[in-house]
Amino acid sequence: MARTPFDRTARVNSLLRQVLAELLEFEVKDPRTRGLTLTEVEVTGDLREAKVYVCGPPALDREAALAGLRRASGFLRREVGHRIRLRATPQLHFFYDDSLDYGARIEARLRDLGLGDAAADEPDEPDETGEADDDGPAGT
Image 1 (cartoon, rainbow, N blue to C red):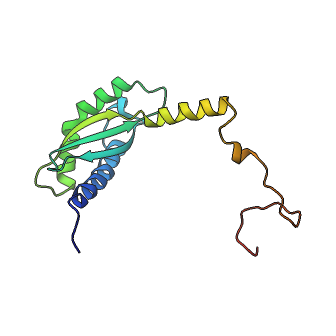
Image 2: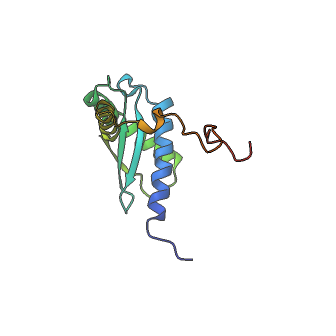
Image 3: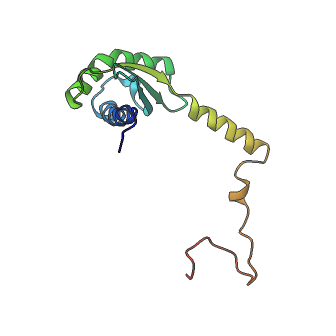
């Protein structure tokens, strides 16, 4: 069975994300990085560079958080090198992930228009026996 050329990068993405999340949670002492969540890690094909996407609470100062991550990047890269066996430890580049904020804005607009969560707000339709379907397992 032949392997696709992206198997290794996908595995490194996953492992790098796991290690960086752990380091951010327990090792980085910079208060500007508190409350950040890693959303995605993308390494290049040669595994020499990695784009690290983070998000945080709405009250978070994005520029300060990214500055804190850039300041800690040397420490993070060294720790990644100790924990993951790679020929070369990737250079880390940090970006703020706006996709969650974008999704929340779209959801809020849909709710304002009365289109959001309409299916979840409606009661279940009674079936031919007159009982509402509770989406439970059949026969219970």
